[in-house]
Amino acid sequence: MKKIAIFPGSFDPYTKGHHDIVLRSLNLFDEVIIGIGYNSAKKNRYFDIETIVSKIEELYKGDPRVSVLVYNDLTSTIAKQHGANFLVRGLRNTTDFEYENTISQMNRKLNPDLETVFLITSPQYATVSSTIIREVHRYGGNVSDYLPYEV
Image (cartoon, rainbow, N blue to C red; front, side):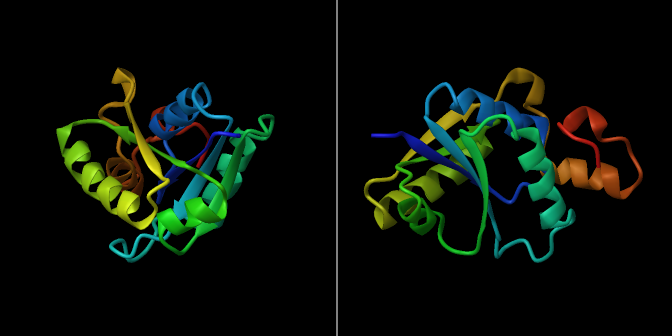
């Protein structure tokens, strides 16, 4: 049986930290689906979703184990629909853990076959967040050190 994982997030933008989590996940799973969900708490995206999908697909074009999916549904439902029994989440700090743990418990309640796997962020990416990158970019700062593609 294939081990399929979904790495869900808004990825606005998709950072080198996200890329690192996907590469490390490929050591654990046969397939990783990068699931770009619409977060109802975040009203508008900063980066165009089609552009981000294109950049991510280009990044992994040589690796058939990675795919990208845009969805507007519960992550637990999407996992079931795509035969994924694992969710992958990166943790930078204890604040991330508190937030992700709550979501993990709800996903498990909604889909008992779904296991969340937490990967601790690699030290060089521990301070990288999409929120900070958006702010730096919004005010004309250089974000190229934090993204695995050009914007």
